[in-house]
Image 1 (cartoon, rainbow, N blue to C red):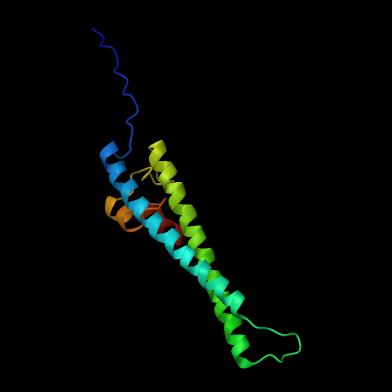
Image 2: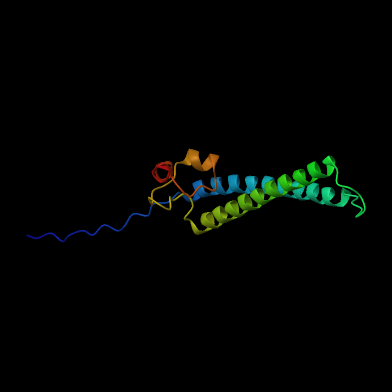
Length: 133
């Protein structure tokens, strides 16, 4: 009286379509805000570049140094914003592929609260703390 062994199909661990739709909305809002911020920063950088009345015969002043430093800071902020936008766009791709919210280290679902706070997260808190040790 052997009973056939029942093979369990591997369970698919992912967020439901309704959860993915919620996360997609969050990501799209953050993406829109990030793109507006980038456009603002790029506008400031452009104005700084156009505003400089730098004659070659003119001596550099302290003000020229501070303008240069401010332009560098704006460029760094814009660069960080571009990286943030890239991460958000990749998160959108994961939503479309239905792989969003899965920790790339543990393979478990990332907590919803973490994803709401950091929608581009690819690591669970457990994986993040393991990596920081």
